Picture 1 (tube, rainbow, N blue to C red):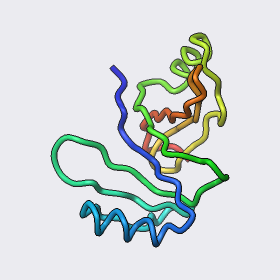
Picture 2 (tube, rainbow, N blue to C red; picture 1 turned 180 degrees about the vertical axis):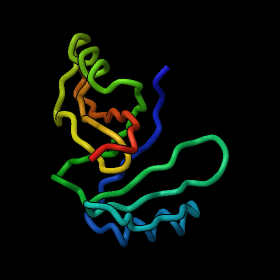
Picture 3 (cartoon, helix red, strand yellow; picture 1 turned 60 degrees about the vertical axis):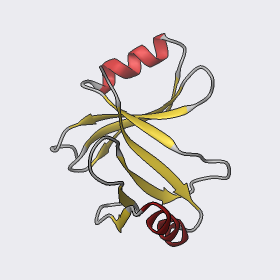
Length: 120
């Protein structure tokens, strides 16, 4: 069964947000050495998920949970058939996998991620 595997926090000031989450919860936040400006968030050991942070792409952008799936294309078809919408189609995250962003019928955004280290 697909489960949430990652969350993304938008931030107007990533340094300020990183300081807040580090001081408040003890999370470890490190700028990602990847092709885009992104910070990786480690929330600790045991049950739970880790996440990431990016600069807020537009006013009103909120936290997005990403669900791990075996087949991105098959899951996108199910999303659309069930009344959801694709808001950002399939894209490669180099060395990680393929992802898309969708909205559920209530307008809530979520991500889908298919792991594939050969993605480019």
